[in-house]
Length: 123
Length: 123
DNA sequence: CTAAATGCTCACATCGATGTCATGGGCAAG
DNA sequence: CTTGCCCATGACATCGATGTGAGCATTTAG
Image 1 (cartoon, each protein chain N blue to C red):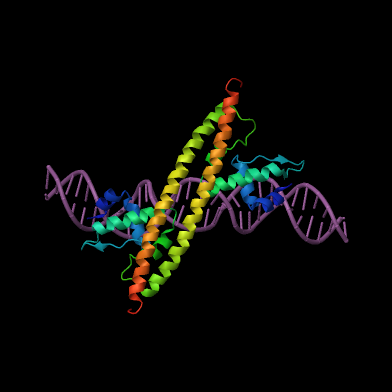
Image 2: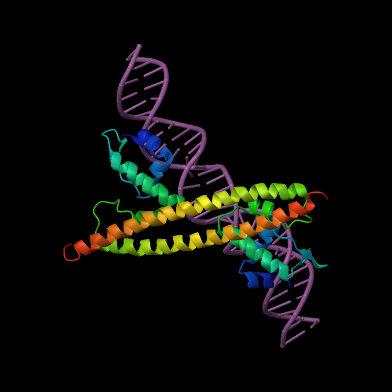
């Protein structure tokens, strides 16, 4: 399939797909005229990329983790593992931050509700 | 206290503190010569702002939620409640996204480990 | 009093994923 | 062949929190 179809299937814009390739996240074969050709595996790959990007990972980290480039080397795999552990830590601490923020928000909501309850008649 | 001390106590840069004020997140009194004056309450306020910013909220949302500006009105409180619920939903879905990414990452880590285990001698 | 430290405002720079526009080529149906 | 749609590349724009530096004023320590 060409880029338009991959875009339709994944929800990623053509622009984004080209960007992923430029960043080394995605590899495509080219038709004789230079158009990008994809197969079903690429749909999965893009889904994974989207999952990671949506979690705030940088394209550079993803490029180092996802085994998209040619053949995996032992050295590359070791490096990937380092990055993966690093990212996992980052994800976990981000989850903690978000959870803390949500708790703080809940407290604020409560305060706000109380204010509204008391001010219903006044004001 | 002046801005340097507040910065030291909260870890927010002076630049950030001025920015928070500019965005309406923080209110300061001024000395006759124009320098910003803060008290202990401001330390708490900045901590809350940091919590929310670290969770990826925009300063505009925070400005609408945090009751920092003058006296709270009933209308303002109602609006704040709307924003708060909106933000809470966003936080929750972001937590879900991060969790999903972490699970995908864990699978990737497992694949990587297997590869390394099998390739230990080869390569 | 003087020098160092701190503060003020204003303005410009940064990062990263993506939108958008321009210009030009490729391909299928009439 | 031509019309219409898809694709390619490249360049510039965007958003938001923060860094940074200039130029000038104020506060504080010696």
